Amino acid sequence: MKDIELNSQIYYVGVNDRRTDLFENHMELPNGVSYNSYLIVDEKVALIDPVEMGFFGEYLAKIKAILQGRSVDYLIVNHDEPDHSGSVALLAKEFPHMEIVGNAKTFAPLEAFYGPIDNQHVVTDGETLCLGRHTLQFFLAPMVHWPESMVTFEQSTGILFSNDAFGGFGALNGAIFDDQVDIAFYEDDMRRYYANIVGKVANPAMKAIQKLGGLPIKMIAPSHGLVWRGNPGWVIGKYSQWGQHVGEEGVVIAYGSMYGNTARMAEIVAQGIADAGISAIRVYDVARTETSFIISDIWKYKGVILGACAHYGNMFPNMSRLVHDLGHFKPQNKVFGLFGGMSWSGGGLLALAKWAEGAGVTLVSENVEVKGAPSRKEDAERLYKLGQTVGHAVKDNH
Ligand code: FEO
Image (cartoon, rainbow, N blue to C red; front, side, top):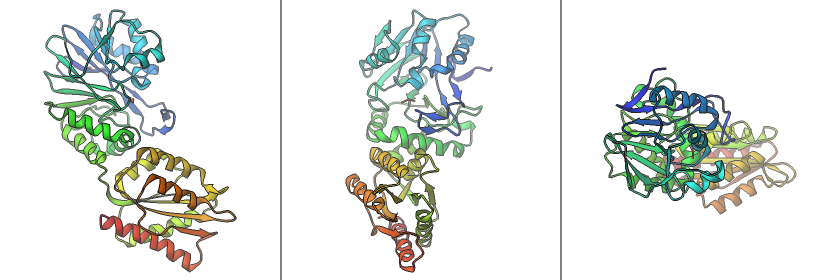
């Protein structure tokens, strides 16, 4: 396989994972994911961000092919989550003199996962490590994505090894650089990654972006997804937009329905939104679309309408999962509407309304509950009006 260089002596040695169905065992990966790793070959050799344990054989072969018998002097562990740190102990066995570089918070979780770690090299915020021509500088980026997270900046080339920040889902299909690909293909998976991983810690992520603002960054090399060589400003702009909760014009309807009546209600609501002049309307059955996709579109658009049938006095079970996650991610600057279906007990809409009150979301229309099917004219009118009201609020940038 041909070596992939980011710059002279800086190599991409990451791997594609096209076989894991669920990231963190709960988010679908229809396009796979990459675990990016980088090798700097200088007077000293540094390896930045290892890969998931199951890919160690392929990963080590890439490293050895470049090193031609040399060893690794430093392993930079920007983040302890096992999708990256999984091969730390295996690398330490392979290169027994290698120093493992992390910060004061890196090693306790690492040893909890993998047992005692020898050759610990603790760095502080802003500290540098000279490799020869290249000098690494470390910046703490707590909570992007875990408390020990940090990023590494290579001073001579201006490459920021940003770990989870600026990453995305989606394996890398041949090319690794943004200027080689159709970015539109990767954008949805990038936003889904942001909304479900980084979005939970959007404020620390924004702080980290601001902290790094003074660095002369020429390239961003994250630990998942594309390397931003041609236009790093594009991904920085996207992170800023998402981090500031700037929603696009559009409405997401997510509904849970047992026998199709709440689904029919969603269709009427959608008509109302369309007639308000909104063209981007996304309708999801929460029992059929995995939550991370819905969260991603909720992050993208300004309007959200949730509808749940009753289920033993509560809301439809998959809707509970969605609102649980929404409570974590706290998307802001949204306009919400709610509807529900009931038969003998009710409770679906009531539970949604309680959640909305606790979450502090902005409801711009009266909640609509329908008994049985939405076949009565007055019920259809109330649902249509709900859609129209939310649609107009989005249009008017409420
Ligand atoms: Fe890609 Fe938080 O690990």
